[in-house]
Length: 324
Length: 192
Image (cartoon, rainbow over all chains, first blue to last red; front, side, top):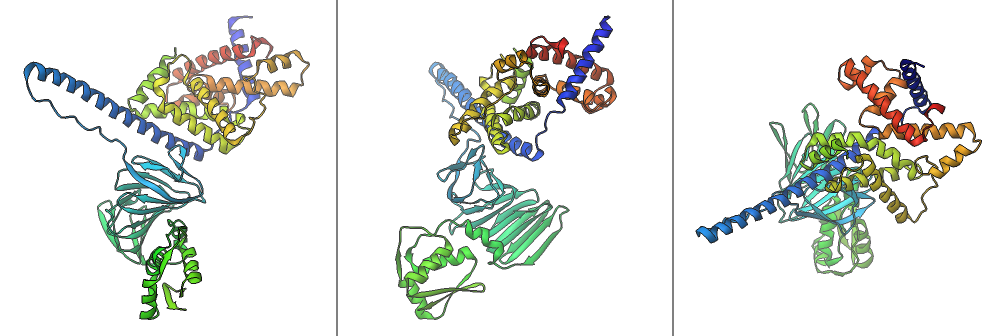
């Protein structure tokens, strides 16, 4: 057989083998995208950490050299430089239901979250985080967020709800549609397929989209489409669309006065706290609660109805309180 | 030593984004195909172990010595992750009959008057294994030519190279495939 014949024979065999085997199975695009994003985050974080270590090492070497110089020439030594971009503790978990990932690992109730961390929730999950010195951040199911700094969060998918504490510092939520910045608020940012929605329950937010800046105050929704059109409409502070936020709320401690607990429940459910008369208001202020079991907002109402001389009832957008 | 893989790792350690993409694109699918049968076909489990494998790998790039290919190194990590997966679930791993897992099974099959379809399946899995382990793009080039029936010009367009470069790549790919398949199949190239 000539070498050409042998070559052809070899090629024919290869062709036959490949046709026998068929194409190698492909990997679903969605799975590939998920894993790629997670692995990329871990890789980037590791590159940053490695650079920080090198900065420290070089600084140490340089300082040592300068100290030698000090010994020889009697000049002041330079100060140490701080490592750049070292991750900082930014949040802790208050409450979680369902599964969530912190980077590549499962998020646990004891997890500490540092800047640079990515969190992804499963479709049926809800998550409440205590954002250090800022307030309560709730993350809806099937969402992906990243703490870019101590005051800025990137929303890559899904929805978040933020409730600033009384003395909290301002936060920014960066999205593909613009940056939402709070001005002392309770608000939700939700990414849809081709738009973003910001809904403000209390206070105000500023939305920066390109060169445009819009402010939304309480009971207002801003919807931003991909072509930059911004629509505004009035919304309710309570109702089915806020249910995930209530479900994700950190538990309420039944301690202190009934008035305090009712205030917390009303805030979580977007209701106005209203007393039937001044005696009901006084009774709520003077009724003390002592329980070690934290409960959800709805459970708190059940407990107050059962264990106090108060009757608590939701009526439209109000939480009505009267004496039994 | 595999100089290209070591250079790729060095670039990744310097933070080169393109290097990360090359690393991921070259190894991800093959790693998934390695993991899936070893977790009993459970796609969610495969996703977990592949993700954790790659995360461990990018954190431990400094430990890659280049004595084997990156994919071989990743598969080693993946085996540990698969073991940990089953330990966590307190399950026994599935019984596998993969050609590359058991030389004894392969030898036993060869010595038996085996059913033709079993031999065919085994051959098919060896072919796909070899394709996954070939250097970058060789497996794709061979599949495009001999399964999809693309012309050299069409393959050249997909790679963004000239026709001569594509022909040269196919020649190298065939040679690499033949060498690797022969090594796995025990020199029975002429019997295939």
